[in-house]
Length: 326
Image (cartoon, rainbow, N blue to C red; front, side, top):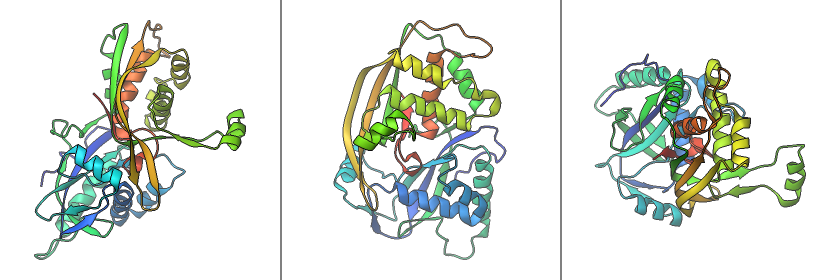
C-alpha cells in the first residue's frame, strides 16, 4: 500500500484518493456522497471521538469534503447511472475510489496515525474492513496524495503557497479562468434573517440556483478562505472588494459547457448541474498595498485554487460541488 510521506508534512490542505476494494460482490447507490460522509465520520470516531463530534457539528466550519464512491468506468456512464438512479455492481476483483480533502492541517497527522494504528492492529488471516459504506464493507488498497496522479484530483499545499502562486503571474487585461464542476453542483439561495431579502424570501421561498454565476461562486469561496486561512493570511482576501467587482461586471461568463443533472440522496432527489464554465476577469487592476497585497483578480485566481480543496456550493462535504481549475 502506498503510504503518505510524512505525518509532519507542512501543508495545510490535502486532497487524497483512497483506493478501496469491496470484500464481496454487491450493489450500491450511484451517488453515495452521504454514505461516504457517514462512513468517514465513523472511521474518525473510532480513532478520536471528540474530533468526529467536532466534524459532525453542522454549526462549525466544514473542515473536510468527501466524494461519493468513484467507479472505474467512463464519466458518461457514471452520470447516466446517477441521473437514472441505477444501482451499480461492486466487484471484489476491482478497486474503487473515494476522494477526501482535509482543510485543517491537524487532521492529516490524525489520519496518518490512525491509519498506522489500523494496519498494525490487524490480526490473523482475515483482514478487517477499513470502511463500511452503507451496507458494503471495503478494504483499503492504497492512499494517494501525489499531485502527479493521473486522476488530477490529488495534491497538497499550504495557504501561504496558494497566496504566492496567485501573486506570481502577471495577468493579461482580459484574463480567462475556467472551472470544471465535476460532481453535481448547486447553490442554496437562503435569505439572511432580518434583511429585506428575508422578507422577499418569505413570499417566494428559498431556491437552489443551478448556474455557476460569479456572485454564487466567488463570495462563498472568499468566506471559506476567511474561515480556514491562518490569521496572518485572512486579510489578503477582501470579500467586499470581490462582491463590488462582481456587481460592476468586472467578471463575466465568457463560455460554458454545462448541463442540468440530478442525483438521489437517501430520502430526496437533488437537482443541479455539471460541466465547465469559463470566466473573463477584466482589468485594469487597482494598485496593491501592504493592506491589500493582491489585486481583486489575483484574489479570484487564489479562490479558484482553493476550490480544488474545499469545493463550492451546497453539501460539498457529501460529494457535491467538486471543482478544479482547468
